[in-house]
Image 1 (cartoon, helix red, strand yellow):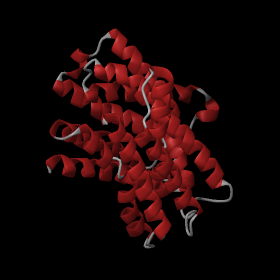
Image 2: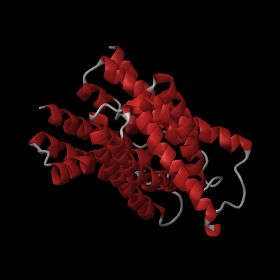
Image 3: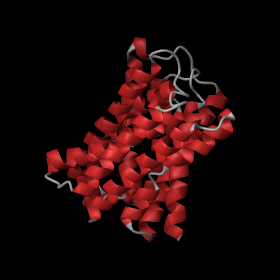
Image 4: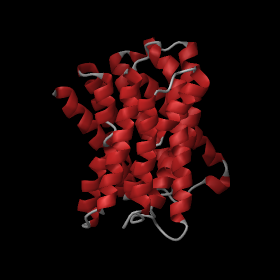
Length: 293
């Protein structure tokens, strides 16, 4: 029971982080938001790693795997992730992000020789069906900003999911070697923050102005709820429950974000939005359970 509560709380934390990022649309650019968020996330996870003594679990080989994971999963995917939220809104972004599960499945099959069974194939189909239903159904495009935002947002969302899947694939050898999770995240976010800060050397990529203090607090809250609190809850859930159940329940973000969208927008999401999110989560569950079958 404790693992169930912790897993759902982790999913809710990830949803809350996306809503906080969404609230900054039009006020902070995707690149600037990613720079601040990664810098803050590094400070939080590095402090946790020091408290736990996690740096002792990292060797040169593990650092190299995590550095590669940072390039794909942080430097590329984070900017696309933020831009996708700003273009599509938090609801559609959470839905498109579920594509990371089938992408990870395909990459594992292609690059690591992992097997894919019928249960996992059915999961991929459910995720795709859920996304199509949620977008093409009545009210499905609510949240998308401006003409052309849907196509561009979907493209960036696919890149985000690919980056997340690739980053997870590259991080897997380091995690299997016993690297402490907060330390792994500190390395990934720290290298990402260094990259985003280095981009300030290029005049076209410098922000016209620094974010105002309320915006900085909101960015900090998104980093805390998504990368620190969400990860802490997820690690605690994994320590108390079955991996398959925890992974499935922690992927319910597309459903848990709908009441948050309802509260903020004061509009009930369309029925197809609920159905699409449920199908996407069910698909993720089948992929996860297929790995243990």
